[in-house]
Length: 275
View 1 (cartoon, one colour):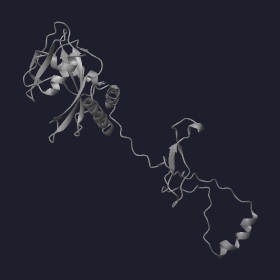
View 2 (view 1 turned 90 degrees about the vertical axis):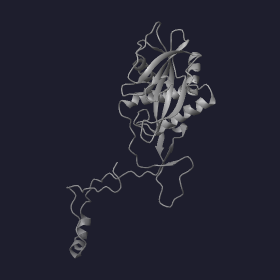
View 3 (view 1 turned 45 degrees about the vertical axis):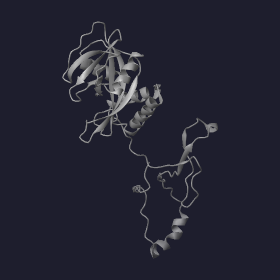
View 4 (view 1 turned 90 degrees about the horizontal axis):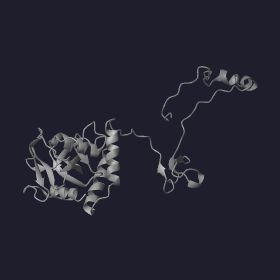
C-alpha cells in the first residue's frame, strides 16, 4: 500500500498541462469541441480509520474488517473499535528458538500447578515469555531466562542423584541452560541430566513437577533463572560419572538430603517421589 506521503510519477502518455495565460484561454473553445481524452487514473492509497471485529452474523466471528474512514474532528470510534495503525515490525525469534519457545509456552499453559504459589510462578513464567519472544529461553536474556532441570531418581525411587555444583558450591539437582539444539523443555532437562550424570537411558516422566525462580549471576548485574523442573528415572544399576560442571556427584536417600539442601530442592525431591 502506498503511503499518503509517497510521490507518484506522471504517466509518459499524459500531456503536460499548459500554464494559465492568454494563449491557453484562447484555445479553450477548441479543447471543448474535441472529445474528452480519458487519462487512466492512478491508484490512490486506501484510507482506513478504524478496525473492529466482524459481526458474527456477517461471516466468520472474530475476522478483522475495516470500518469507514473518519474525517478529522469527527466523533471517536465506537466502543470496541481500535484505531488502525501502521504495522510494526514483527518480533521474530531466531529459527532455532521457535520450536523451543512454542513448547515452553504450551508446557506452562497446560500444566496444572499443585498449589497457588506454583500457579503464580507459572503465570509469571508465561508473562516472561510473552515479553521476550525472541530470547526468553536463552541465557543471553538479561532480564531472566527459562532453564530446565531434573530430579534424577534411581530405579527404586528411593535415592536422588545430586551434584555438588562447581560454582554454587552446594548440592543441587541436575540441569541448566537451554541450548540451540533443544526442541522441548523436557528434552533440554534430559540432555542436561545426561551430560551431568554420565548416565545413558534416563527416562523422563511426563510434564513438569515444579517451578522455581532464583537469582543467579549469568550476567554481571545479576539475572534470574526461571527453572522448569522435571523427574527422570535412572536405569537399574546405573553408574554416574562426574562432569566438569560438578565437584562431585552422589546418591542421597530421598528422606536424608544433605544438611545444606535448600527448601526448593527439598520440595522438588518430595514432589518427584510423589509422582
